[in-house]
Image (cartoon, rainbow, N blue to C red; front, side, top):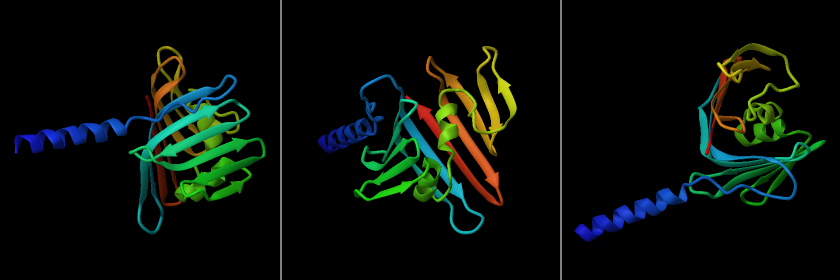
Length: 185
């Protein structure tokens, strides 16, 4: 029985190790890169709530963005590629969908739009240039800790040299609520 418990503990340790965040995407040229965990929950006005969680790898060159969404065990849920004028969603089964922007693709994936253009700025700790900013709060070092932009309440904290280590976005609109949390590793 003692060996069974040791084997079970070893198996749990291996499984937990496999839940580690993904490797950086990498590539040629300078880019803003982050890896970590995500959680998304959406409560529509009618119907059941939906939720997803897992790991992410983010690589943004300014002109092109690649976002890998992975299951907690490391399997690919989806990959999103964004370039000027187009966005491509590649599902785990190889199916591809195209749209003019990434917000529409994430709406397809999660059933609710998430402002990827805003997220590209917020993950770096700055407001998005494409929308009006309300209610900005800053910490003692002048870093944004909360803002309201394009209907989203954005909280940022645990800053490191690249930006916030934690982000929480939430929007309540017409009886629907969506929230997104990112934890950078």
